[in-house]
Amino acid sequence: MRKNIVAGNWKMNTTVPEGVELAKAVVAASAQVPAEVELVIGTPFTHLYPVNEVVKGTRVALSAENCADHAKGAYTGEISVDMLTSVGCQYTILGHSERRQYYGETDEKLVEKIKLALAAGLKVIFCIGENLEEREAEKHFAVCEAQTVNVLKNFTAEDMKNIVIAYEPVWAIGTGKTATADQAEEIHAFVRKVLADMFGAQVADDTTILYGGSCKPSNAKELFAKPDIDGGLIGGAALKAEDFIGIALAF
Ligand code: 13P
Image 1 (tube, rainbow, N blue to C red):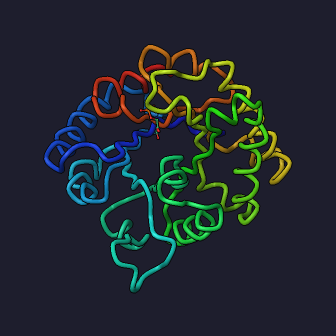
Image 2 (image 1 turned 120 degrees about the vertical axis):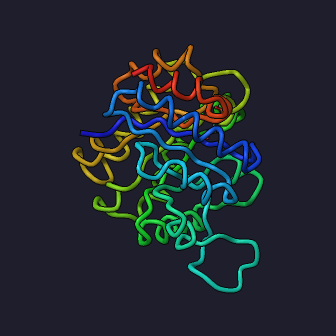
């Protein structure tokens, strides 16, 4: 059976001291959340080492927000998967729409990054999602299918055990405009069908698919009640421990 996961993506927010305090507050509040819900926090690279000091040995897992598409070497400013595991990371987010949009993250680069991440023992939160123009042109199914197939066709059913998918419609990110639970569910169910065609029904059934985009305590319950929505990837609301945990309590 697939896991329920609530993962925070802090993006480029908080200083290191603020991040450490936030992590402490998340750990302190995490006892309220049923044990079967996995909690993950994704922090900027600078925060990973000190935040790991806070979360290690607790139920809160640590994620990066990106990684390099090369293993090591002369790539100034980049962070490798081995660097991430060396500071206690268990996950990395990859393919976030902000990285696709602002930093030229292509499907080809994502394939390289996911290969490196999996080989290093990291789990991957792989993001997909259409933008507003694509939604208005009713291309959202086609866009999500292409993003899923183009990247995941390079991976095996075994690899899928360590890949979580996050559906994040770009028009819902940071806008306060959440996809309705029905809008999210129809894409989640569709992506699961795409996975079934690619890897078989068992893999599709076992893959955790998260929703992201203006998810908050007030709308999480309705979203998480849907059969194919297995949790959330949380931006703004992950910056307050109370809201982040409030979302996890929606299960
Ligand atoms: P918001 O929750 O701020 O809309 O961000 C969602 C997101 O992009 C998480 O990766």
